[in-house]
Length: 157
Image 1 (cartoon, rainbow, N blue to C red):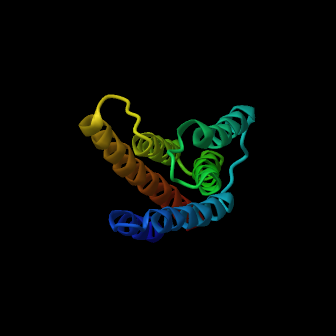
Image 2: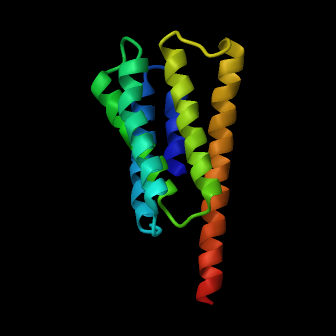
């Protein structure tokens, strides 16, 4: 969460978009490692969902990367973003957290679409969707992971 907060600050500063994205990417990498330490006995459907998320991460940059953003860095970020969501989907944490990660993916997808001049509805509505999916996603991740850790601690007692 701290790396995400730093990313938000850097994104708000002129000329630091790549640095902000790098901070978020580092946060996704930390989250992947953390969620992997809490892996569940995932079934076929869970692995399929994880694979679909990763495929989306591979497909999003060629479809949405705006001119001026480095494609390789955008691809790396998208794969880390969706790998974070996939690893949370495969974890023992409540599904609520994984749904939050998917909302985070949607937020970044709309953001990249907007950076390239595209839109879903319109500038104001799309901006509101980015923030709603981002804030709601982060909240659900925090709530779900927190509940999962508290439940695990209660079982250990």
